[in-house]
Length: 398
Image (cartoon, rainbow, N blue to C red; front, side, top):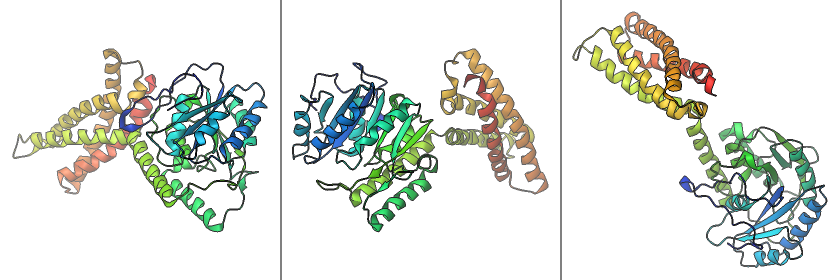
Protein backbone atom coordinates (compact mmCIF):
# COMPACT_ATOMS: atom_id res chain seq x y z
CA UNK A 1 0.00 0.00 0.00
CA UNK A 2 1.20 3.49 -0.72
CA UNK A 3 0.18 6.83 0.69
CA UNK A 4 0.30 10.24 -0.87
CA UNK A 5 2.04 11.82 2.11
CA UNK A 6 4.34 10.86 4.99
CA UNK A 7 1.46 10.60 7.50
CA UNK A 8 1.50 7.79 10.08
CA UNK A 9 1.46 4.29 8.63
CA UNK A 10 -1.92 2.53 8.65
CA UNK A 11 -2.46 0.66 11.92
CA UNK A 12 -3.75 -2.61 10.49
CA UNK A 13 -4.17 -4.56 13.68
CA UNK A 14 -4.28 -8.38 13.50
CA UNK A 15 -7.26 -10.08 15.14
CA UNK A 16 -8.67 -13.60 15.38
CA UNK A 17 -10.82 -14.97 12.56
CA UNK A 18 -9.55 -12.47 10.01
CA UNK A 19 -11.54 -9.56 11.45
CA UNK A 20 -10.45 -5.91 11.44
CA UNK A 21 -10.00 -3.51 14.33
CA UNK A 22 -10.05 0.28 14.21
CA UNK A 23 -7.53 1.71 16.74
CA UNK A 24 -8.65 3.99 19.54
CA UNK A 25 -6.72 6.87 17.98
CA UNK A 26 -3.73 7.86 15.86
CA UNK A 27 -1.63 11.05 16.01
CA UNK A 28 -4.20 13.47 14.67
CA UNK A 29 -2.25 16.52 13.56
CA UNK A 30 -5.41 18.43 14.45
CA UNK A 31 -7.60 16.37 12.11
CA UNK A 32 -11.24 16.17 13.27
CA UNK A 33 -12.88 14.44 10.31
CA UNK A 34 -11.73 11.54 8.09
CA UNK A 35 -13.73 10.62 5.01
CA UNK A 36 -13.01 7.35 3.18
CA UNK A 37 -13.79 6.88 -0.51
CA UNK A 38 -13.42 3.21 -1.54
CA UNK A 39 -12.69 2.90 -5.26
CA UNK A 40 -12.32 0.41 -8.07
CA UNK A 41 -12.31 1.51 -11.71
CA UNK A 42 -13.52 5.04 -10.98
CA UNK A 43 -11.09 6.94 -13.23
CA UNK A 44 -13.90 8.96 -14.77
CA UNK A 45 -15.38 10.01 -11.45
CA UNK A 46 -12.61 10.25 -8.87
CA UNK A 47 -11.27 13.74 -9.62
CA UNK A 48 -14.70 15.45 -9.92
CA UNK A 49 -15.78 13.65 -6.74
CA UNK A 50 -12.67 14.73 -4.80
CA UNK A 51 -13.02 18.35 -5.95
CA UNK A 52 -16.69 18.42 -4.93
CA UNK A 53 -16.00 16.79 -1.56
CA UNK A 54 -13.09 19.09 -0.66
CA UNK A 55 -15.03 22.16 -1.78
CA UNK A 56 -17.95 21.19 0.48
CA UNK A 57 -15.84 20.29 3.50
CA UNK A 58 -13.81 23.50 3.19
CA UNK A 59 -17.01 25.43 3.78
CA UNK A 60 -17.80 23.69 7.09
CA UNK A 61 -16.81 26.09 9.85
CA UNK A 62 -13.68 25.10 11.74
CA UNK A 63 -13.45 21.64 10.19
CA UNK A 64 -9.99 20.14 9.76
CA UNK A 65 -10.37 17.10 7.56
CA UNK A 66 -8.69 14.47 5.42
CA UNK A 67 -10.05 12.50 2.48
CA UNK A 68 -8.66 8.97 2.15
CA UNK A 69 -9.04 7.18 -1.17
CA UNK A 70 -8.69 3.41 -0.71
CA UNK A 71 -8.26 1.91 -4.16
CA UNK A 72 -8.25 -1.80 -4.98
CA UNK A 73 -5.41 -1.47 -7.52
CA UNK A 74 -7.72 -0.26 -10.29
CA UNK A 75 -6.29 -1.04 -13.75
CA UNK A 76 -7.67 2.26 -15.10
CA UNK A 77 -5.33 4.35 -12.91
CA UNK A 78 -7.90 5.58 -10.37
CA UNK A 79 -5.32 5.74 -7.59
CA UNK A 80 -2.84 7.73 -9.71
CA UNK A 81 -5.51 10.25 -10.69
CA UNK A 82 -6.42 10.76 -7.04
CA UNK A 83 -2.77 11.05 -6.09
CA UNK A 84 -2.20 13.70 -8.73
CA UNK A 85 -4.62 16.01 -6.89
CA UNK A 86 -2.82 15.75 -3.55
CA UNK A 87 -0.35 18.56 -4.39
CA UNK A 88 -3.27 20.88 -5.08
CA UNK A 89 -5.38 19.50 -2.21
CA UNK A 90 -3.10 18.29 0.62
CA UNK A 91 -6.06 16.85 2.54
CA UNK A 92 -6.15 13.96 0.04
CA UNK A 93 -4.43 10.69 0.94
CA UNK A 94 -4.33 7.57 -1.20
CA UNK A 95 -4.00 3.93 -0.17
CA UNK A 96 -3.54 1.39 -2.96
CA UNK A 97 -4.44 -2.19 -1.96
CA UNK A 98 -2.85 -5.05 -3.84
CA UNK A 99 -3.44 -8.03 -1.53
CA UNK A 100 -7.17 -7.76 -0.84
CA UNK A 101 -10.33 -6.30 -2.33
CA UNK A 102 -13.93 -5.47 -1.49
CA UNK A 103 -15.80 -2.31 -0.59
CA UNK A 104 -16.54 -3.06 3.07
CA UNK A 105 -12.97 -4.05 3.93
CA UNK A 106 -11.65 -1.04 1.99
CA UNK A 107 -13.74 1.23 4.21
CA UNK A 108 -12.38 -0.33 7.40
CA UNK A 109 -8.80 -0.17 6.08
CA UNK A 110 -9.34 3.52 5.49
CA UNK A 111 -10.71 4.00 9.00
CA UNK A 112 -7.73 2.15 10.42
CA UNK A 113 -5.43 4.67 8.75
CA UNK A 114 -7.65 7.66 9.59
CA UNK A 115 -6.62 10.27 12.14
CA UNK A 116 -9.96 11.94 12.82
CA UNK A 117 -12.33 11.35 15.70
CA UNK A 118 -15.19 11.45 13.20
CA UNK A 119 -15.05 8.67 10.59
CA UNK A 120 -17.09 8.69 7.39
CA UNK A 121 -17.69 6.89 4.12
CA UNK A 122 -19.33 7.78 0.82
CA UNK A 123 -19.25 6.50 -2.75
CA UNK A 124 -16.73 7.96 -5.18
CA UNK A 125 -19.09 7.89 -8.15
CA UNK A 126 -21.09 11.05 -7.22
CA UNK A 127 -24.26 9.05 -6.50
CA UNK A 128 -23.99 10.38 -2.96
CA UNK A 129 -24.33 14.20 -3.15
CA UNK A 130 -21.28 15.79 -1.42
CA UNK A 131 -23.28 18.87 -0.40
CA UNK A 132 -25.05 16.79 2.29
CA UNK A 133 -21.74 16.27 4.13
CA UNK A 134 -22.08 19.56 6.01
CA UNK A 135 -25.43 18.52 7.50
CA UNK A 136 -24.04 15.14 8.50
CA UNK A 137 -21.00 16.71 10.19
CA UNK A 138 -23.29 19.08 12.10
CA UNK A 139 -25.41 16.14 13.28
CA UNK A 140 -22.32 14.51 14.80
CA UNK A 141 -21.20 17.79 16.35
CA UNK A 142 -24.67 18.08 17.89
CA UNK A 143 -24.17 14.80 19.75
CA UNK A 144 -25.19 11.94 17.44
CA UNK A 145 -23.00 8.84 17.54
CA UNK A 146 -24.04 7.99 13.98
CA UNK A 147 -25.32 10.28 11.22
CA UNK A 148 -26.77 8.56 8.15
CA UNK A 149 -27.59 9.87 4.72
CA UNK A 150 -31.00 8.28 4.18
CA UNK A 151 -33.13 7.84 1.07
CA UNK A 152 -36.19 6.99 3.17
CA UNK A 153 -36.77 10.08 5.30
CA UNK A 154 -38.08 13.54 4.46
CA UNK A 155 -36.18 15.11 1.54
CA UNK A 156 -34.74 11.70 0.67
CA UNK A 157 -35.38 9.50 -2.34
CA UNK A 158 -34.00 7.83 -5.43
CA UNK A 159 -33.82 9.39 -8.86
CA UNK A 160 -34.82 7.11 -11.72
CA UNK A 161 -34.81 3.64 -10.25
CA UNK A 162 -36.88 1.04 -12.07
CA UNK A 163 -39.69 -0.79 -10.29
CA UNK A 164 -37.56 -3.96 -10.27
CA UNK A 165 -34.63 -2.20 -8.60
CA UNK A 166 -36.94 -0.71 -5.96
CA UNK A 167 -38.43 -4.14 -5.24
CA UNK A 168 -35.00 -5.77 -4.95
CA UNK A 169 -33.79 -3.03 -2.56
CA UNK A 170 -36.86 -3.27 -0.34
CA UNK A 171 -36.75 -7.07 -0.38
CA UNK A 172 -33.13 -7.01 0.78
CA UNK A 173 -34.13 -4.65 3.60
CA UNK A 174 -37.03 -6.92 4.61
CA UNK A 175 -34.71 -9.94 4.77
CA UNK A 176 -32.45 -7.91 7.04
CA UNK A 177 -35.39 -7.03 9.28
CA UNK A 178 -36.32 -10.71 9.60
CA UNK A 179 -32.79 -11.89 10.42
CA UNK A 180 -31.59 -8.88 12.43
CA UNK A 181 -34.63 -6.88 13.57
CA UNK A 182 -32.78 -5.28 16.48
CA UNK A 183 -30.02 -4.06 14.11
CA UNK A 184 -31.65 -3.29 10.78
CA UNK A 185 -34.77 -1.90 12.42
CA UNK A 186 -32.88 0.92 14.13
CA UNK A 187 -32.65 3.09 10.99
CA UNK A 188 -34.81 3.86 7.97
CA UNK A 189 -32.09 3.09 5.42
CA UNK A 190 -29.82 0.28 6.68
CA UNK A 191 -28.55 -0.25 3.12
CA UNK A 192 -27.05 3.24 3.01
CA UNK A 193 -23.37 3.55 2.19
CA UNK A 194 -23.27 7.24 3.13
CA UNK A 195 -22.74 7.91 6.84
CA UNK A 196 -20.55 9.37 9.61
CA UNK A 197 -19.81 8.02 13.07
CA UNK A 198 -17.70 8.77 16.11
CA UNK A 199 -14.51 6.71 16.21
CA UNK A 200 -15.10 5.59 19.78
CA UNK A 201 -18.27 3.72 18.78
CA UNK A 202 -16.29 1.07 16.86
CA UNK A 203 -12.71 1.46 18.16
CA UNK A 204 -11.30 -1.82 19.41
CA UNK A 205 -14.27 -3.90 18.21
CA UNK A 206 -13.60 -6.76 15.76
CA UNK A 207 -15.32 -5.98 12.45
CA UNK A 208 -15.82 -8.70 9.87
CA UNK A 209 -18.04 -7.47 7.01
CA UNK A 210 -18.73 -9.18 3.70
CA UNK A 211 -19.68 -7.37 0.50
CA UNK A 212 -20.93 -3.79 0.35
CA UNK A 213 -23.17 -3.13 3.37
CA UNK A 214 -20.77 -1.84 6.00
CA UNK A 215 -23.48 0.10 7.90
CA UNK A 216 -25.12 -3.12 9.11
CA UNK A 217 -21.77 -4.24 10.55
CA UNK A 218 -21.38 -0.90 12.34
CA UNK A 219 -24.91 -1.06 13.77
CA UNK A 220 -24.48 -4.68 14.85
CA UNK A 221 -21.07 -4.48 16.50
CA UNK A 222 -20.64 -0.83 17.41
CA UNK A 223 -21.74 0.97 20.56
CA UNK A 224 -24.29 3.23 18.89
CA UNK A 225 -26.62 5.09 21.24
CA UNK A 226 -27.89 8.12 19.34
CA UNK A 227 -28.62 8.22 15.60
CA UNK A 228 -29.54 11.10 13.30
CA UNK A 229 -30.72 10.70 9.71
CA UNK A 230 -30.42 13.30 6.97
CA UNK A 231 -32.41 12.92 3.77
CA UNK A 232 -30.66 12.88 0.38
CA UNK A 233 -31.63 11.93 -3.15
CA UNK A 234 -29.58 9.07 -4.55
CA UNK A 235 -28.29 10.06 -7.99
CA UNK A 236 -27.86 7.90 -11.03
CA UNK A 237 -24.29 7.17 -12.05
CA UNK A 238 -23.16 9.45 -14.91
CA UNK A 239 -19.83 7.80 -15.70
CA UNK A 240 -18.45 4.27 -15.35
CA UNK A 241 -20.40 1.09 -14.63
CA UNK A 242 -22.25 -0.16 -11.56
CA UNK A 243 -20.62 -2.83 -9.36
CA UNK A 244 -23.98 -4.32 -8.27
CA UNK A 245 -24.39 -7.99 -9.22
CA UNK A 246 -26.05 -11.20 -8.02
CA UNK A 247 -22.82 -12.00 -6.18
CA UNK A 248 -23.19 -8.80 -4.16
CA UNK A 249 -26.66 -9.82 -2.98
CA UNK A 250 -25.39 -13.28 -2.01
CA UNK A 251 -22.59 -11.66 -0.02
CA UNK A 252 -25.19 -9.48 1.68
CA UNK A 253 -27.16 -12.57 2.77
CA UNK A 254 -23.95 -14.23 3.95
CA UNK A 255 -23.12 -11.10 5.95
CA UNK A 256 -26.55 -11.06 7.62
CA UNK A 257 -26.29 -14.73 8.62
CA UNK A 258 -22.75 -14.37 9.95
CA UNK A 259 -23.68 -11.32 12.00
CA UNK A 260 -26.80 -13.06 13.33
CA UNK A 261 -24.83 -16.05 14.58
CA UNK A 262 -22.03 -13.89 15.96
CA UNK A 263 -24.45 -11.72 17.93
CA UNK A 264 -26.23 -14.79 19.27
CA UNK A 265 -22.92 -16.20 20.46
CA UNK A 266 -22.25 -12.93 22.30
CA UNK A 267 -25.70 -12.83 23.92
CA UNK A 268 -25.51 -13.23 27.72
CA UNK A 269 -28.67 -15.33 27.66
CA UNK A 270 -27.25 -17.72 25.06
CA UNK A 271 -24.04 -18.00 27.05
CA UNK A 272 -26.05 -18.58 30.22
CA UNK A 273 -27.89 -21.39 28.41
CA UNK A 274 -24.62 -22.96 27.25
CA UNK A 275 -23.30 -22.85 30.81
CA UNK A 276 -26.62 -24.22 31.99
CA UNK A 277 -26.16 -27.16 29.62
CA UNK A 278 -22.88 -28.08 31.35
CA UNK A 279 -24.64 -27.74 34.70
CA UNK A 280 -27.42 -29.96 33.38
CA UNK A 281 -24.89 -32.71 32.64
CA UNK A 282 -23.37 -32.38 36.12
CA UNK A 283 -26.83 -32.43 37.68
CA UNK A 284 -28.06 -35.44 35.71
CA UNK A 285 -24.93 -37.54 36.23
CA UNK A 286 -24.88 -36.93 39.97
CA UNK A 287 -28.63 -37.48 40.28
CA UNK A 288 -28.25 -40.84 38.57
CA UNK A 289 -25.25 -41.83 40.69
CA UNK A 290 -26.89 -40.82 43.97
CA UNK A 291 -30.56 -41.79 43.47
CA UNK A 292 -30.77 -44.64 41.00
CA UNK A 293 -31.62 -47.97 42.69
CA UNK A 294 -28.83 -49.62 40.71
CA UNK A 295 -26.29 -47.18 42.17
CA UNK A 296 -26.25 -45.59 45.67
CA UNK A 297 -30.05 -45.53 45.90
CA UNK A 298 -30.36 -42.44 48.11
CA UNK A 299 -33.68 -40.62 48.42
CA UNK A 300 -34.70 -38.50 45.43
CA UNK A 301 -34.94 -35.20 47.33
CA UNK A 302 -31.54 -35.55 49.03
CA UNK A 303 -29.96 -36.64 45.77
CA UNK A 304 -31.49 -33.71 43.89
CA UNK A 305 -30.21 -31.17 46.44
CA UNK A 306 -26.66 -32.52 46.22
CA UNK A 307 -26.61 -32.76 42.42
CA UNK A 308 -28.11 -29.29 42.05
CA UNK A 309 -25.56 -27.72 44.41
CA UNK A 310 -22.71 -29.25 42.40
CA UNK A 311 -24.30 -27.81 39.24
CA UNK A 312 -24.60 -24.39 40.94
CA UNK A 313 -20.86 -24.33 41.71
CA UNK A 314 -20.07 -25.37 38.12
CA UNK A 315 -22.39 -22.73 36.67
CA UNK A 316 -21.09 -19.93 38.86
CA UNK A 317 -17.48 -20.49 37.84
CA UNK A 318 -18.36 -20.44 34.12
CA UNK A 319 -20.79 -17.51 34.35
CA UNK A 320 -18.36 -15.40 36.35
CA UNK A 321 -15.53 -16.05 33.89
CA UNK A 322 -17.58 -15.87 30.66
CA UNK A 323 -21.28 -14.98 30.67
CA UNK A 324 -21.13 -11.96 32.97
CA UNK A 325 -17.42 -11.22 32.60
CA UNK A 326 -18.08 -7.66 31.29
CA UNK A 327 -20.01 -6.92 34.50
CA UNK A 328 -17.20 -8.16 36.74
CA UNK A 329 -14.89 -5.32 35.71
CA UNK A 330 -12.06 -4.79 38.15
CA UNK A 331 -13.80 -6.70 40.97
CA UNK A 332 -11.74 -9.85 40.45
CA UNK A 333 -10.39 -10.42 43.97
CA UNK A 334 -11.26 -13.64 45.80
CA UNK A 335 -13.36 -11.65 48.25
CA UNK A 336 -15.42 -10.09 45.46
CA UNK A 337 -15.77 -13.44 43.72
CA UNK A 338 -16.93 -15.06 46.97
CA UNK A 339 -19.56 -12.37 47.46
CA UNK A 340 -20.85 -12.95 43.96
CA UNK A 341 -20.92 -16.68 44.62
CA UNK A 342 -23.01 -16.18 47.78
CA UNK A 343 -25.53 -14.09 45.87
CA UNK A 344 -25.53 -16.55 42.97
CA UNK A 345 -26.02 -19.43 45.38
CA UNK A 346 -28.85 -17.66 47.23
CA UNK A 347 -30.70 -16.93 43.99
CA UNK A 348 -30.10 -20.43 42.67
CA UNK A 349 -31.12 -21.96 46.01
CA UNK A 350 -34.52 -20.34 45.63
CA UNK A 351 -34.54 -21.75 42.13
CA UNK A 352 -33.50 -25.11 43.56
CA UNK A 353 -36.47 -25.06 45.94
CA UNK A 354 -38.71 -24.37 42.98
CA UNK A 355 -37.01 -27.15 41.03
CA UNK A 356 -37.46 -29.69 43.85
CA UNK A 357 -41.15 -28.83 44.15
CA UNK A 358 -41.65 -29.13 40.39
CA UNK A 359 -39.73 -32.41 40.27
CA UNK A 360 -41.76 -34.01 43.05
CA UNK A 361 -45.08 -32.82 41.66
CA UNK A 362 -44.30 -34.30 38.25
CA UNK A 363 -42.79 -37.55 39.60
CA UNK A 364 -45.05 -38.30 42.57
CA UNK A 365 -48.36 -36.84 41.45
CA UNK A 366 -48.29 -37.47 37.70
CA UNK A 367 -45.93 -40.43 37.52
CA UNK A 368 -43.63 -38.73 35.01
CA UNK A 369 -40.25 -40.34 34.39
CA UNK A 370 -37.79 -38.87 36.90
CA UNK A 371 -35.32 -37.72 34.26
CA UNK A 372 -37.93 -36.07 32.05
CA UNK A 373 -39.43 -34.41 35.12
CA UNK A 374 -35.98 -33.17 36.12
CA UNK A 375 -35.44 -31.71 32.64
CA UNK A 376 -38.68 -29.72 32.84
CA UNK A 377 -37.75 -28.45 36.30
CA UNK A 378 -34.27 -27.41 35.12
CA UNK A 379 -35.61 -25.41 32.15
CA UNK A 380 -38.07 -23.46 34.30
CA UNK A 381 -35.44 -22.88 36.98
CA UNK A 382 -32.90 -21.69 34.36
CA UNK A 383 -35.22 -18.83 33.34
CA UNK A 384 -35.58 -17.85 36.99
CA UNK A 385 -31.84 -17.99 37.60
CA UNK A 386 -30.90 -15.93 34.53
CA UNK A 387 -33.40 -13.17 35.21
CA UNK A 388 -32.47 -12.63 38.85
CA UNK A 389 -28.74 -13.21 38.54
CA UNK A 390 -28.47 -10.64 35.75
CA UNK A 391 -30.45 -8.10 37.77
CA UNK A 392 -29.07 -8.86 41.24
CA UNK A 393 -26.16 -11.31 41.21
CA UNK A 394 -23.73 -9.11 39.28
CA UNK A 395 -25.51 -5.81 39.79
CA UNK A 396 -23.00 -4.19 42.14
CA UNK A 397 -20.14 -4.65 39.67
CA UNK A 398 -21.95 -3.55 36.52
